[in-house]
Amino acid sequence: MAKRGTPGIAIGGLSGGEAKEEYCKVVDTCTSLLPDGKPRYVMGVGYPEDLVVSVALGADMFDCVWGTRTARFGNAITSSGVLNLRSALYAKDFTAVDPECQCLVCRLGITKAYIHHLVAKETAGAHLLTMHNVAFLLRLMNKARAAIVEDRYPAFLREFFFKWHGGDKGKYPTWAVDALRGVGVDLLEE
Image 1: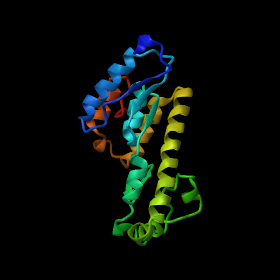
Image 2: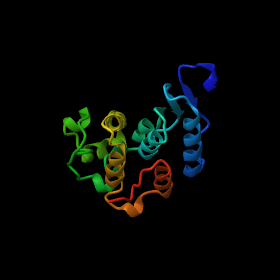
Image 3: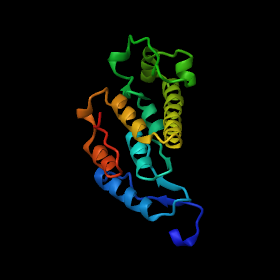
Image 4: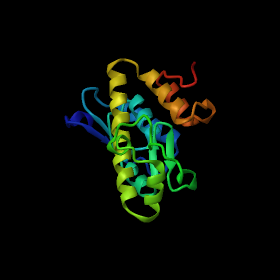
């Protein structure tokens, strides 16, 4: 495919349940064989950890339904991980979905408690979470792009994983630590 002069390359057949270690090997191998000047599109990838690791492995573009699908199940993607707002824990939580977020939902001050109420009975909860989740994923990729341009992607990765796992490096997935070490980024470095 690389010799055919296509405007970009799609890497598909992944995100179907294979082990993350295998996924990373395939993405790393494919991107290393593809021309630098053309977009490398990995199909069906949308979990935040997968996105930032895949970028480090050389991928440029992604698409996935996960952000919207998980919203329909009452889940909010936040800088500190995924929150299941259907849980009774959020019934009386009158804080914004994500204090770091500037999406319309968070700017309007729509609370976790309100969305908790909505997701049990009305589709409006899924609509609000969809807006929030898509905005979160766009912001994540914008931050990744800025970190690359500013030549600080390793620091961005360390910050992302630290926040995503609540500051507990023991929770970092081994597959991500190993894949990033393979491209010269040590997540466990202080």
